[in-house]
Image (tube, rainbow, N blue to C red; front, side, top):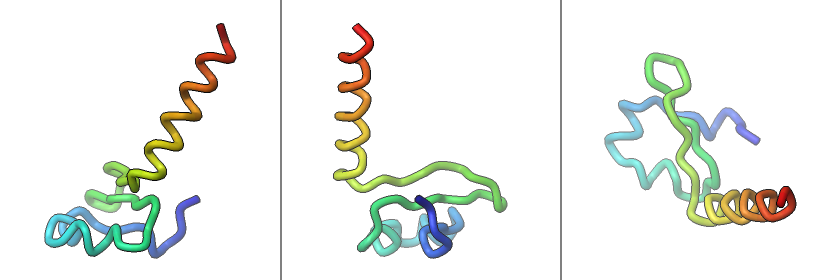
Length: 60
């Protein structure tokens, strides 16, 4: 779930990326007010990876 405070422009993000990730799990980075990419905490990334692995195993 993305909420307003978890969105930042790429120019501000490049100045100090870790300050924006502090206490956040998912951060949306905008470039010219369009989605550029998402920045995920290691915990969220690992959970997504595990969920994907479980789905692959279930399809076999």
